[in-house]
Length: 483
Image (cartoon, rainbow, N blue to C red; front, side):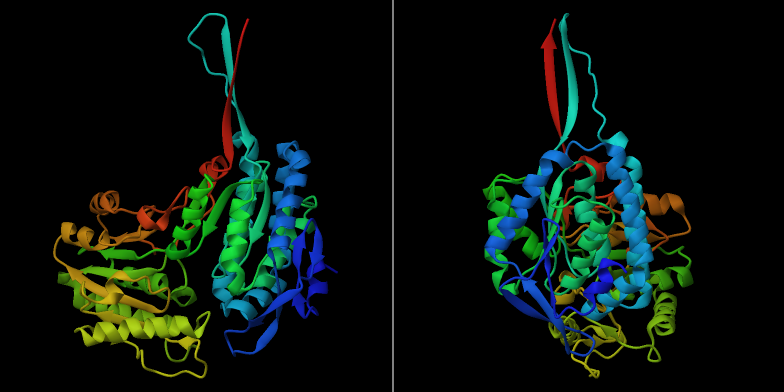
């Protein structure tokens, strides 16, 4: 019986501090977005609990930082295997707490296992130092790479296994210890991440998992960032919250890695394969109900093929997410109201609903079906605002420069896509698109372990994945000597 099996009967999800389950004095309810019923309670970490988690990580750092790369590699590999072997249990937690569908959860778990295996295979090369040549005769130098110490990781609910695991795995792999602050919307999912690493053989104190009530967010987060043992922070979430985290980190002079919101455009050039582009745009816009930071928010199509593409997009969306399929489950009613409000504002200012009915009422206030809005212009809120839901805007352009002006007319820059049968033209557009990633002839939602991942502009800074992801959690030290 796995540790997770014992968790099924818990009425309150515990914290994990120094390898032990901690039920806090206060708790918060965790409700299913699918039916609004209470699932269980989550332990709500106090400042004392959060401080205890940091202290446990600090105590564990001395020994963990001295472990061999091969030892840390093997833990990563075992954790990857456990994510796969325990996936049905993990799916149950994610579906219950976030309303995610099976397809998206499969992608999430497989990506988690992939990234842990990739990390494990890169550790030895990542921590290698160097012996540079020096300027003067008789002088010598080496450059070594060292872990920072205790890393604070803050991860969201929407793709919790891969985003939660990566937030601590790169740090652990390079010899740091961690405190993972998971979303209060999915505490059992984050408990499971901690339990899997514990089952994989990670020593007590190396990974501590906490969550808290929304009302306690400001004081607990500030206490964590201010703690002198916290040496680096990484945060994945909204740009609004990310800016607060950045301000606090700057106040305390702590290095920070941020992956924030997005407003991804898919640019469909005149020579694109219309059917393939339409299918990719439909999936990119509506997978997981659009609750992905890389989701396609704008589709820009060349005017000469706009009618053909619009028909193909409607057909693809109806085939994949039509009325015979269940509506999307969004994480809370506010997300539905936000998307309905964006559509209503756009229509009131001259936009047209190409597909869907934003005013439709489903059996739960958290459910909504896809909406495609055309004739969108700059004065509409939906043009600028990240919807993070099942709405997408359709715009037309006449030239590449016009398409790029629209795509780049945003504070965000996380992901984008270009569709064209002319690779030279697609590459020309991709190079001018201000974004951390651009995918040619594939959807904007694209993240794999071997590809560096991160944003531009207000989508954040720093990088996860591949060698660069490991380098984020190592600092360089120069040591010199003379004969």
